[in-house]
Length: 435
Ligand code: AMP
Image 1: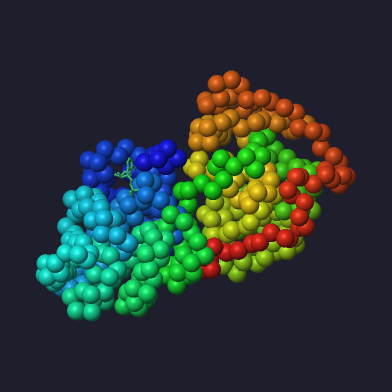
Image 2: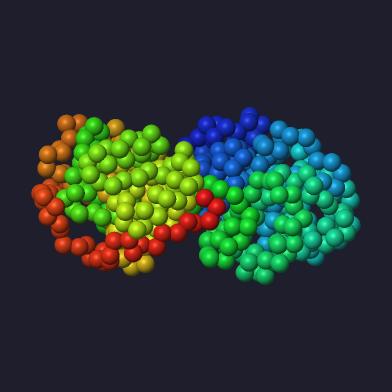
């Protein structure tokens, strides 16, 4: 696996059964990768998934492990029936995924099979006759088999589209549409693609419903266009500091991340009380409320949008000037996704983190991931009582600078470079159209 997708966390904590955990342990994986950490609980919960993940991220186990666990809880496949279908663009990938299914499912009483063109069809027909719980297939051969009535999808529970971008590149779109027509409407859909182009999003709209979105390809990790820094501050002072930063710097459009839904609600109230128009988006908000909040944020009616990571993944806001990490995320990759929302398309952005002493572990993990210490700036009047320790990755202490004294009474700083567009000009799009 590539460096940025190095393992994080613990497999057992993700809700996988002992049989699957023992197969995983046999592979020598000690910890889940970033995509596994996020995808496994979502798939186990029955959610649809849209994941931007290239080969090398551990994506195959990311969908295979929870898929096997879900199938193991239901009834075995009947004759010619398939319960989970994994579509791949190439024979090689089909064979590879099928092998993973075998390996991870070695302690489970599930049947799996793989079908692709260029080899005899009769053995495939014979195997399908007995019914398979997981079928890995390339689109062309699968359609042949379907047209010959060798396979039926009446009991299909889960569809996985692997490497969807390559499928489109290889001209499989019509085959995919034909296959989709043959599937029951009620099913779980998992879509993986290295990139999410407009064409892929268009396809996704016809497949996934209210998906959990995951991206393990940092968009702006190395971007120098994003100015990143942190303010050491005591936890109980964070709201007041944020409010002051927004007022004093004249931030007109700021996306703020909190770790919890409750935290998002509390902060929104605080800002509103302080005369900053704010709205929260998170999993407990209805789709209507989220759409409204986004539209208001885009038009400039709402100045501060407070979001949890999951909710924010469903939105794509281009050229956002200002991102604030009110809490640091537990998963360091989320930091990269958060700040990837600013400074796009050549524009300059700022990403500011408010960090209290108890977040030193999260800070160290982030600095390790981005391979540099974040510059620290103390704000007058908010110097913490509980010192933020020097983080592990900083060999020498990160430079501590005093921020410029805040300007009171609405005195605005000159606009940031690249940040001088009019408020509300940001292009706010929903990613999948299904959220
Ligand atoms: P994939 O991105 O699914 O093609 O997987 C890339 C490689 O990472 C494969 O060789 C897997 O066996 C390996 N791999 C998957 N998950 C883990 C993990 N949690 N720890 C270590 N290696 C893994």
